[in-house]
Length: 393
Image (cartoon, rainbow, N blue to C red):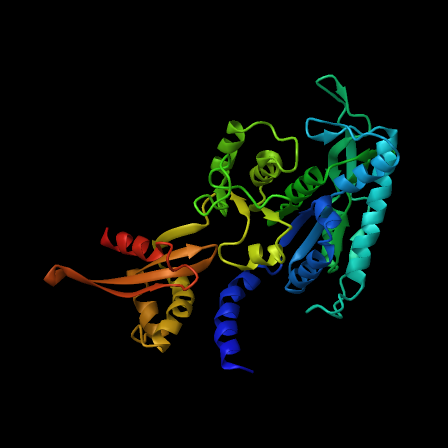
Protein backbone atom coordinates (compact mmCIF):
# COMPACT_ATOMS: atom_id res chain seq x y z
CA UNK A 1 0.00 0.00 0.00
CA UNK A 2 1.47 3.34 -1.07
CA UNK A 3 2.47 6.11 1.31
CA UNK A 4 0.41 8.55 -0.77
CA UNK A 5 -2.71 6.44 -0.19
CA UNK A 6 -2.06 6.36 3.56
CA UNK A 7 -1.50 10.12 3.58
CA UNK A 8 -4.85 10.84 1.90
CA UNK A 9 -7.01 8.05 3.32
CA UNK A 10 -6.21 8.37 7.01
CA UNK A 11 -7.14 12.06 7.47
CA UNK A 12 -10.16 11.58 5.19
CA UNK A 13 -11.46 8.65 7.23
CA UNK A 14 -10.84 10.50 10.48
CA UNK A 15 -12.90 13.42 9.17
CA UNK A 16 -15.75 11.12 8.15
CA UNK A 17 -15.79 8.96 11.29
CA UNK A 18 -17.65 11.47 13.52
CA UNK A 19 -20.51 11.59 11.02
CA UNK A 20 -20.69 7.80 10.82
CA UNK A 21 -20.99 7.71 14.60
CA UNK A 22 -23.46 10.60 14.68
CA UNK A 23 -25.89 9.07 12.15
CA UNK A 24 -25.87 5.51 13.48
CA UNK A 25 -29.39 4.53 14.55
CA UNK A 26 -30.93 7.66 12.98
CA UNK A 27 -33.89 7.63 10.58
CA UNK A 28 -33.65 9.19 7.12
CA UNK A 29 -36.57 9.63 4.73
CA UNK A 30 -35.21 9.87 1.18
CA UNK A 31 -37.37 11.09 -1.69
CA UNK A 32 -36.13 10.32 -5.21
CA UNK A 33 -37.62 12.28 -8.08
CA UNK A 34 -38.89 10.11 -10.92
CA UNK A 35 -36.59 12.13 -13.17
CA UNK A 36 -33.59 10.58 -11.40
CA UNK A 37 -34.76 7.09 -12.30
CA UNK A 38 -35.54 8.16 -15.87
CA UNK A 39 -32.00 9.56 -16.13
CA UNK A 40 -30.49 6.18 -15.23
CA UNK A 41 -29.30 7.22 -11.76
CA UNK A 42 -31.01 4.38 -9.86
CA UNK A 43 -28.01 1.97 -9.67
CA UNK A 44 -25.73 4.58 -8.09
CA UNK A 45 -28.41 5.76 -5.67
CA UNK A 46 -29.17 2.19 -4.62
CA UNK A 47 -25.46 1.56 -4.02
CA UNK A 48 -25.18 4.67 -1.82
CA UNK A 49 -28.35 3.84 0.12
CA UNK A 50 -27.07 0.31 0.78
CA UNK A 51 -23.77 1.76 2.03
CA UNK A 52 -25.54 4.27 4.29
CA UNK A 53 -27.79 1.55 5.69
CA UNK A 54 -24.77 -0.68 6.35
CA UNK A 55 -23.46 2.09 8.63
CA UNK A 56 -26.53 1.85 10.84
CA UNK A 57 -28.93 4.38 9.30
CA UNK A 58 -32.62 3.45 9.11
CA UNK A 59 -33.99 4.37 5.67
CA UNK A 60 -37.46 5.03 4.29
CA UNK A 61 -37.31 5.47 0.52
CA UNK A 62 -40.08 7.25 -1.39
CA UNK A 63 -39.90 7.24 -5.19
CA UNK A 64 -41.53 9.66 -7.60
CA UNK A 65 -42.98 8.75 -11.00
CA UNK A 66 -43.93 12.00 -12.73
CA UNK A 67 -42.07 11.39 -16.05
CA UNK A 68 -43.01 7.71 -16.09
CA UNK A 69 -46.73 8.52 -15.81
CA UNK A 70 -46.40 11.24 -18.45
CA UNK A 71 -44.69 8.80 -20.80
CA UNK A 72 -47.54 6.33 -20.47
CA UNK A 73 -50.13 9.06 -20.96
CA UNK A 74 -48.35 10.17 -24.11
CA UNK A 75 -48.31 6.60 -25.41
CA UNK A 76 -52.09 6.51 -24.96
CA UNK A 77 -52.54 9.88 -26.63
CA UNK A 78 -53.83 11.39 -23.41
CA UNK A 79 -52.65 14.81 -22.24
CA UNK A 80 -51.08 15.29 -18.80
CA UNK A 81 -52.94 17.99 -16.88
CA UNK A 82 -51.68 19.96 -13.87
CA UNK A 83 -52.96 22.72 -11.63
CA UNK A 84 -51.52 24.25 -8.45
CA UNK A 85 -48.42 22.10 -8.96
CA UNK A 86 -50.43 18.85 -8.75
CA UNK A 87 -51.53 16.35 -11.38
CA UNK A 88 -55.23 16.22 -12.22
CA UNK A 89 -55.76 12.47 -12.10
CA UNK A 90 -58.64 11.27 -14.23
CA UNK A 91 -59.37 7.57 -14.72
CA UNK A 92 -56.80 7.23 -17.53
CA UNK A 93 -54.09 8.98 -15.51
CA UNK A 94 -54.95 6.79 -12.50
CA UNK A 95 -54.41 3.63 -14.55
CA UNK A 96 -51.08 5.00 -15.77
CA UNK A 97 -50.06 5.91 -12.22
CA UNK A 98 -50.89 2.43 -10.94
CA UNK A 99 -48.89 0.83 -13.73
CA UNK A 100 -45.92 3.18 -13.26
CA UNK A 101 -45.89 2.65 -9.48
CA UNK A 102 -45.88 -1.12 -9.89
CA UNK A 103 -43.11 -1.05 -12.49
CA UNK A 104 -40.88 1.28 -10.49
CA UNK A 105 -41.37 -0.65 -7.28
CA UNK A 106 -40.31 -3.78 -9.16
CA UNK A 107 -37.21 -2.05 -10.58
CA UNK A 108 -36.15 -0.65 -7.21
CA UNK A 109 -36.64 -3.94 -5.35
CA UNK A 110 -34.74 -5.75 -8.11
CA UNK A 111 -31.87 -3.26 -7.84
CA UNK A 112 -31.54 -3.90 -4.10
CA UNK A 113 -31.84 -7.67 -4.62
CA UNK A 114 -29.01 -8.05 -7.12
CA UNK A 115 -26.28 -8.06 -4.48
CA UNK A 116 -24.85 -4.87 -6.07
CA UNK A 117 -22.25 -6.67 -8.23
CA UNK A 118 -19.08 -4.83 -9.29
CA UNK A 119 -19.55 -2.24 -6.55
CA UNK A 120 -17.97 -1.76 -3.10
CA UNK A 121 -21.23 -3.19 -1.68
CA UNK A 122 -21.04 -6.44 -3.68
CA UNK A 123 -22.69 -9.32 -1.83
CA UNK A 124 -24.59 -7.09 0.59
CA UNK A 125 -28.19 -7.95 1.30
CA UNK A 126 -30.78 -5.22 1.71
CA UNK A 127 -34.24 -6.39 2.69
CA UNK A 128 -36.91 -4.15 1.16
CA UNK A 129 -40.40 -4.00 2.65
CA UNK A 130 -43.29 -2.30 0.87
CA UNK A 131 -46.88 -2.12 2.02
CA UNK A 132 -50.05 -0.12 2.46
CA UNK A 133 -48.52 2.19 5.04
CA UNK A 134 -50.45 5.22 3.78
CA UNK A 135 -54.11 6.17 4.04
CA UNK A 136 -55.16 8.85 1.57
CA UNK A 137 -57.94 11.36 1.10
CA UNK A 138 -59.03 13.27 -2.02
CA UNK A 139 -57.73 16.73 -2.79
CA UNK A 140 -61.23 17.53 -4.00
CA UNK A 141 -62.06 20.80 -5.75
CA UNK A 142 -59.60 23.69 -5.39
CA UNK A 143 -60.36 27.08 -6.96
CA UNK A 144 -62.91 25.44 -9.21
CA UNK A 145 -60.53 22.66 -10.35
CA UNK A 146 -61.63 19.08 -9.70
CA UNK A 147 -58.53 17.01 -9.01
CA UNK A 148 -60.53 13.76 -9.28
CA UNK A 149 -58.29 10.85 -8.15
CA UNK A 150 -55.45 13.03 -6.87
CA UNK A 151 -55.02 12.65 -3.14
CA UNK A 152 -53.20 13.81 -0.04
CA UNK A 153 -51.84 11.77 2.85
CA UNK A 154 -54.49 11.33 5.53
CA UNK A 155 -52.61 8.97 7.85
CA UNK A 156 -49.23 7.25 8.10
CA UNK A 157 -48.91 3.80 9.69
CA UNK A 158 -46.04 4.87 11.92
CA UNK A 159 -46.08 1.67 13.98
CA UNK A 160 -45.93 -0.51 10.88
CA UNK A 161 -43.03 1.43 9.38
CA UNK A 162 -41.13 1.41 12.68
CA UNK A 163 -41.57 -2.36 13.02
CA UNK A 164 -40.11 -2.82 9.54
CA UNK A 165 -37.17 -0.55 10.33
CA UNK A 166 -36.59 -2.38 13.62
CA UNK A 167 -36.28 -5.59 11.58
CA UNK A 168 -33.39 -4.01 9.68
CA UNK A 169 -35.37 -3.51 6.48
CA UNK A 170 -35.44 -0.58 4.10
CA UNK A 171 -39.02 0.63 3.74
CA UNK A 172 -40.06 1.47 0.17
CA UNK A 173 -43.10 3.68 -0.43
CA UNK A 174 -44.78 4.52 -3.72
CA UNK A 175 -46.74 7.79 -4.07
CA UNK A 176 -50.00 5.92 -3.99
CA UNK A 177 -52.59 5.56 -1.27
CA UNK A 178 -56.02 4.18 -0.52
CA UNK A 179 -58.97 5.56 1.39
CA UNK A 180 -60.58 3.56 4.22
CA UNK A 181 -63.17 2.43 1.64
CA UNK A 182 -60.49 1.16 -0.75
CA UNK A 183 -60.56 4.03 -3.25
CA UNK A 184 -57.16 4.58 -4.92
CA UNK A 185 -55.48 7.99 -5.01
CA UNK A 186 -52.47 9.27 -6.88
CA UNK A 187 -50.18 11.16 -4.49
CA UNK A 188 -46.99 13.07 -5.15
CA UNK A 189 -43.59 12.01 -3.87
CA UNK A 190 -42.87 15.30 -2.10
CA UNK A 191 -46.13 15.19 -0.13
CA UNK A 192 -45.59 11.55 0.86
CA UNK A 193 -41.95 12.01 1.90
CA UNK A 194 -42.73 15.13 3.93
CA UNK A 195 -45.73 13.56 5.67
CA UNK A 196 -43.85 10.36 6.49
CA UNK A 197 -40.78 12.23 7.78
CA UNK A 198 -42.99 14.45 9.94
CA UNK A 199 -45.01 11.59 11.40
CA UNK A 200 -41.92 9.48 12.08
CA UNK A 201 -40.08 12.51 13.48
CA UNK A 202 -37.23 11.47 11.22
CA UNK A 203 -33.77 12.91 11.74
CA UNK A 204 -33.44 13.87 8.07
CA UNK A 205 -35.65 14.41 5.03
CA UNK A 206 -33.60 14.26 1.84
CA UNK A 207 -34.81 15.08 -1.67
CA UNK A 208 -32.77 13.97 -4.71
CA UNK A 209 -33.88 16.45 -7.34
CA UNK A 210 -33.20 18.10 -10.67
CA UNK A 211 -31.96 21.28 -8.98
CA UNK A 212 -28.59 21.59 -7.20
CA UNK A 213 -30.07 23.35 -4.18
CA UNK A 214 -30.92 26.96 -3.35
CA UNK A 215 -28.40 29.59 -4.42
CA UNK A 216 -27.43 32.46 -2.12
CA UNK A 217 -29.00 34.84 -4.65
CA UNK A 218 -31.91 32.70 -5.79
CA UNK A 219 -32.82 34.93 -8.74
CA UNK A 220 -29.28 35.29 -10.12
CA UNK A 221 -27.46 32.86 -12.43
CA UNK A 222 -24.99 30.34 -11.09
CA UNK A 223 -21.45 31.63 -10.66
CA UNK A 224 -18.49 31.48 -8.28
CA UNK A 225 -19.95 34.52 -6.54
CA UNK A 226 -23.38 32.90 -6.29
CA UNK A 227 -22.83 29.37 -4.96
CA UNK A 228 -25.31 26.99 -3.38
CA UNK A 229 -26.36 28.05 0.12
CA UNK A 230 -25.38 24.92 2.02
CA UNK A 231 -27.12 25.86 5.27
CA UNK A 232 -30.41 27.78 5.23
CA UNK A 233 -32.00 28.67 8.58
CA UNK A 234 -35.73 27.98 8.78
CA UNK A 235 -36.58 31.66 9.24
CA UNK A 236 -34.63 32.59 6.10
CA UNK A 237 -36.28 29.77 4.13
CA UNK A 238 -39.74 30.94 5.19
CA UNK A 239 -38.88 34.51 4.24
CA UNK A 240 -37.65 33.37 0.82
CA UNK A 241 -40.92 31.55 0.13
CA UNK A 242 -42.83 34.79 0.68
CA UNK A 243 -40.61 36.60 -1.83
CA UNK A 244 -40.89 34.20 -4.77
CA UNK A 245 -43.78 33.13 -6.97
CA UNK A 246 -45.74 30.00 -5.99
CA UNK A 247 -43.91 26.91 -7.20
CA UNK A 248 -45.62 24.66 -9.74
CA UNK A 249 -42.70 22.91 -11.45
CA UNK A 250 -40.01 20.73 -9.81
CA UNK A 251 -37.36 23.12 -11.12
CA UNK A 252 -38.95 26.13 -9.41
CA UNK A 253 -36.94 27.46 -6.46
CA UNK A 254 -39.73 26.97 -3.95
CA UNK A 255 -40.98 23.55 -5.11
CA UNK A 256 -38.90 21.41 -2.75
CA UNK A 257 -38.10 24.25 -0.36
CA UNK A 258 -41.74 24.51 0.75
CA UNK A 259 -41.71 20.84 1.75
CA UNK A 260 -38.40 21.24 3.60
CA UNK A 261 -39.88 24.15 5.56
CA UNK A 262 -43.03 22.18 6.37
CA UNK A 263 -41.00 19.20 7.61
CA UNK A 264 -38.70 21.39 9.68
CA UNK A 265 -41.66 23.11 11.34
CA UNK A 266 -43.14 19.68 12.07
CA UNK A 267 -40.06 18.59 14.03
CA UNK A 268 -37.75 17.07 11.40
CA UNK A 269 -34.33 18.33 12.43
CA UNK A 270 -32.84 18.74 8.95
CA UNK A 271 -34.19 18.73 5.42
CA UNK A 272 -31.98 18.61 2.33
CA UNK A 273 -32.26 19.40 -1.39
CA UNK A 274 -29.60 17.56 -3.42
CA UNK A 275 -28.83 17.19 -7.15
CA UNK A 276 -29.25 13.63 -8.41
CA UNK A 277 -26.94 14.55 -11.30
CA UNK A 278 -23.93 14.48 -8.94
CA UNK A 279 -22.62 10.97 -8.38
CA UNK A 280 -22.54 10.19 -4.66
CA UNK A 281 -24.62 13.25 -3.70
CA UNK A 282 -26.12 11.40 -0.72
CA UNK A 283 -22.71 10.47 0.67
CA UNK A 284 -21.28 13.94 0.09
CA UNK A 285 -24.18 15.58 1.91
CA UNK A 286 -24.38 13.19 4.85
CA UNK A 287 -20.71 12.49 5.57
CA UNK A 288 -18.82 15.63 4.46
CA UNK A 289 -18.55 18.81 6.52
CA UNK A 290 -20.05 21.35 4.09
CA UNK A 291 -22.18 18.93 2.07
CA UNK A 292 -23.18 19.51 -1.53
CA UNK A 293 -26.77 20.77 -1.56
CA UNK A 294 -28.96 22.99 0.61
CA UNK A 295 -29.93 22.02 4.15
CA UNK A 296 -32.85 23.70 5.92
CA UNK A 297 -32.52 23.71 9.70
CA UNK A 298 -34.34 25.43 12.53
CA UNK A 299 -31.13 26.95 13.88
CA UNK A 300 -27.53 27.36 12.79
CA UNK A 301 -25.44 24.22 13.17
CA UNK A 302 -22.28 26.19 13.87
CA UNK A 303 -21.70 27.51 17.36
CA UNK A 304 -18.80 29.57 18.69
CA UNK A 305 -18.55 28.95 22.41
CA UNK A 306 -16.36 28.24 25.41
CA UNK A 307 -15.28 24.62 25.78
CA UNK A 308 -16.43 22.23 28.49
CA UNK A 309 -14.98 18.99 29.81
CA UNK A 310 -17.10 17.11 27.24
CA UNK A 311 -15.13 18.78 24.44
CA UNK A 312 -11.70 17.51 25.51
CA UNK A 313 -11.77 14.50 23.17
CA UNK A 314 -12.70 16.67 20.19
CA UNK A 315 -9.97 19.20 20.99
CA UNK A 316 -7.37 16.45 21.25
CA UNK A 317 -8.46 14.98 17.91
CA UNK A 318 -8.22 18.42 16.29
CA UNK A 319 -4.77 19.40 17.57
CA UNK A 320 -3.07 15.98 17.40
CA UNK A 321 -1.92 16.20 13.73
CA UNK A 322 -0.43 19.64 14.38
CA UNK A 323 1.40 18.35 17.46
CA UNK A 324 2.88 15.51 15.43
CA UNK A 325 4.27 17.81 12.72
CA UNK A 326 5.71 20.20 15.31
CA UNK A 327 3.33 23.09 14.67
CA UNK A 328 1.96 22.88 18.22
CA UNK A 329 3.50 21.95 21.55
CA UNK A 330 2.41 18.53 22.79
CA UNK A 331 -0.40 18.64 25.37
CA UNK A 332 -1.77 15.59 27.13
CA UNK A 333 -5.39 14.90 28.03
CA UNK A 334 -4.90 15.76 31.71
CA UNK A 335 -3.55 19.20 30.83
CA UNK A 336 -6.44 19.98 28.48
CA UNK A 337 -9.03 18.67 30.96
CA UNK A 338 -7.54 20.94 33.60
CA UNK A 339 -7.55 23.96 31.29
CA UNK A 340 -10.80 23.25 29.39
CA UNK A 341 -12.41 26.48 30.58
CA UNK A 342 -9.59 28.44 28.91
CA UNK A 343 -10.50 27.07 25.45
CA UNK A 344 -12.84 28.59 22.88
CA UNK A 345 -14.12 26.31 20.11
CA UNK A 346 -16.12 26.35 16.90
CA UNK A 347 -18.43 23.36 16.75
CA UNK A 348 -20.37 22.39 13.64
CA UNK A 349 -22.96 19.62 13.76
CA UNK A 350 -21.31 18.11 16.84
CA UNK A 351 -17.76 18.22 15.44
CA UNK A 352 -15.06 20.68 16.61
CA UNK A 353 -13.37 22.44 13.69
CA UNK A 354 -11.39 25.21 15.43
CA UNK A 355 -10.05 26.02 18.88
CA UNK A 356 -7.75 28.31 20.81
CA UNK A 357 -6.83 28.75 24.47
CA UNK A 358 -6.31 31.96 26.42
CA UNK A 359 -4.27 31.90 29.64
CA UNK A 360 -4.72 35.13 31.66
CA UNK A 361 -2.03 36.59 33.93
CA UNK A 362 -3.90 39.16 36.06
CA UNK A 363 -0.82 40.30 37.98
CA UNK A 364 0.92 41.30 34.76
CA UNK A 365 -2.34 42.51 33.21
CA UNK A 366 -1.74 40.35 30.16
CA UNK A 367 -2.73 37.02 28.66
CA UNK A 368 -1.18 34.36 26.44
CA UNK A 369 -2.92 32.67 23.52
CA UNK A 370 -2.14 29.03 22.76
CA UNK A 371 -3.20 26.11 20.58
CA UNK A 372 -4.88 28.18 17.86
CA UNK A 373 -5.94 25.43 15.47
CA UNK A 374 -8.28 25.18 12.49
CA UNK A 375 -9.17 21.89 10.84
CA UNK A 376 -7.76 21.54 7.30
CA UNK A 377 -11.36 21.10 6.11
CA UNK A 378 -12.28 24.58 7.34
CA UNK A 379 -9.14 26.55 6.60
CA UNK A 380 -9.69 29.65 4.51
CA UNK A 381 -13.24 30.19 5.79
CA UNK A 382 -12.39 32.64 8.57
CA UNK A 383 -12.81 30.24 11.52
CA UNK A 384 -9.43 31.16 13.01
CA UNK A 385 -10.32 34.85 12.90
CA UNK A 386 -13.68 34.14 14.58
CA UNK A 387 -11.97 32.33 17.45
CA UNK A 388 -9.41 35.11 17.90
CA UNK A 389 -12.10 37.80 17.97
CA UNK A 390 -14.04 35.81 20.57
CA UNK A 391 -10.92 35.50 22.74
CA UNK A 392 -10.15 39.20 22.41
CA UNK A 393 -13.56 39.99 23.91
